[in-house]
Length: 224
Image: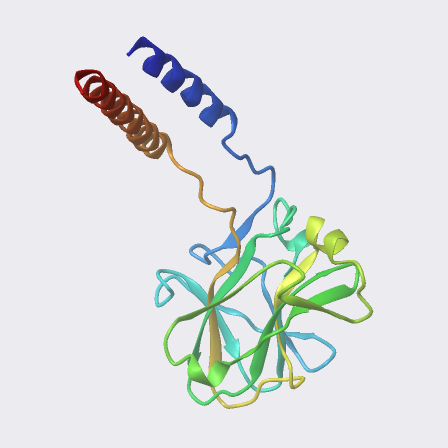
């Protein structure tokens, strides 16, 4: 029994030493307090248009919106945030979108650095987003294709300066609005201390059960 607790203690220490850490490897905007520095750009020239913010009606709480007609992209620069985006390699970039009124257009997620971009290999029709819908991709080479002369995905992902969505047919169209909420690439969830406690308790219980079964098998062998 003493050996079991020694093994458990060693496992406990190793587990905590192996907990992953993330240094500035995240970006997430929920629009609960303001527009978050986001832009709605119109026409191929990305001409800034008005961005409306509301504290309610999002998914949940706050969200932003803008008119759909001639909309080319919805984006944010790293200079518009307090800390930039950090290294987003392998994280999941996601956005919640919803339309009001008549809107059409094929949207793609994108990520860029110094004027070079990678875009999602797939797109979605915003006309189907009559209610809040989450669209996401894992930021790796299997989901992103080069655009605008880009040829170095790892370099872009390690410190992007421009992320957002754009419309594959150049612009969206319609008389309605496109709403956005919960945009970004938060870090993978890691277990809390309570969750680690449950994990380690389960491991300990398994070790004890295995030890008891081993003793039972040994007694059965001797008596036989």
